[in-house]
Length: 218
Image (cartoon, rainbow, N blue to C red; front, side, top):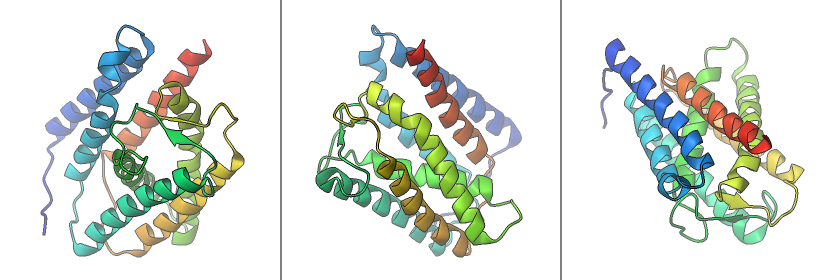
């Protein structure tokens, strides 16, 4: 059984500052053609490090949380494998080189990304006073809102491709349904969900993709 790590206020400030600088550097480095070959391989590493830092702040490592973490990674990665090979889940798409090596045509880091995003949205929505099923629906909608900003940028950065087609509505519906199922489990399981890095990381994700969207538009 893992134990929680105490993060002091001073350490927290340093972590948030370093993460902010890293995401800003990512926006700049992936926009400048001369720097893209150096920054693109860092994209999967950034996701892994972000998740590690997020879990560093987690305070309740009971079995139910470990079960959920493995479930989110497995479901997230598994549904992407099914989606890529059948086109029946999100639509017809394929992963590019931007997220690192592939296994069964899907970068394994995508499973970690699902856990990170579900954790952040679930933690942010947790304090809201409403029925837990409504919170699950709200968190799933937050996930889809983030994906709306992710999709066009991901194509430009060679994370994945829709083969020149418009992003289908099916993609967003599937994102909502899959994430809603994970959030139902998240809110139903008995572990503490407070994490003071989660809103920062979620904000950095939104700003990262929003920043790229604006720069690509310009």
